[in-house]
View 1: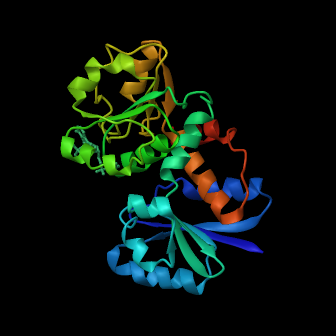
View 2: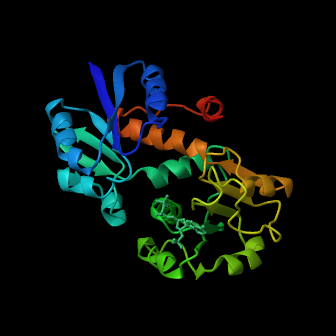
Amino acid sequence: MSLKLGLIGHPIGHSLSPWIHAKFIDLAGLNGEYKLYEGDHEKLPSVIQHLKNASIDGFNITVPYKQVIVDYLDELDKDAEILGAVNTVVNENGKWKGYSTDGEGYVRSLVEPYPDLLHPGTSVLLLGAGGAARGIYRAIVQKGVKTVDIANRSLDKAEALLPLNDGSSSSRVMSFLEAEQHLHEYDLIIQTTSVGMKPNIEEQIIRLDNLLESTVVSDIVYQPITTRLLKDAKDRGAKIHHGHSMLLYQGQLAFEKWTGKNLEVSHLVDELEQKLR
Ligand code: ATR
């Protein structure tokens, strides 16, 4: 049997997912393909029909289709429903089921190097409240940590994340200025905005003057690999977590949903970093 997988989105020409999943298919000892299906909104219905006709086993879906794909699904996982976004579709005996694996994939990438980080005493600060922050916020809250505070430029967007909290953690919304003043209270800081991304690599979302060396600073930006925020955190003796590992573990989780195989992928983190350089 040959596995049929792929990615729908626009633009996706530079996606690393084909490389990642080719590695996974090899590691799993399977045969198969992971193809890119790129197209604008008008092309989406015909792309979907093509994938249905081809009996695709599963696919990822990225911007700008994470919401509209719901109209084409037979079933929706509870987290995907609550988040209102799908990034992974699984063909379950001819029925398409949508999942949101971005947040949980991110958490996997974090606990791989820091296995003791998330526990009932952990205080987390989330920077940003966009699409990426939503999935991460929910996944971290579900780990039952003590606090997940949200700092964002527009406070109303940060407030909009709060209903994703099922009550497992306490949460406050704050400005970046307030976050800077309270930085020493956090065990983990997660940067989810586009600030610091190429080509604006000199930008940094907050000042780290109050950062403790014991804190882990994570930036989901992966171009550049080491953002100014991460460099600053490292210079101050704190621990860091790079965004590119998230791509790998989000892929690992999607592959697990498609094949049932939970692959050991940590050895690919450095290879992926080389590809991004
Ligand atoms: P994504 O899906 O990648 O998270 P998004 O939904 O557009 O993208 O969210 C972008 C996030 O980056 C938001 O938190 C946004 O802040 P606002 O909610 O205030 O718009 C944040 N962001 C983008 N550019 C920013 C900047 N220059 N300064 C501060 N925050 C910024």
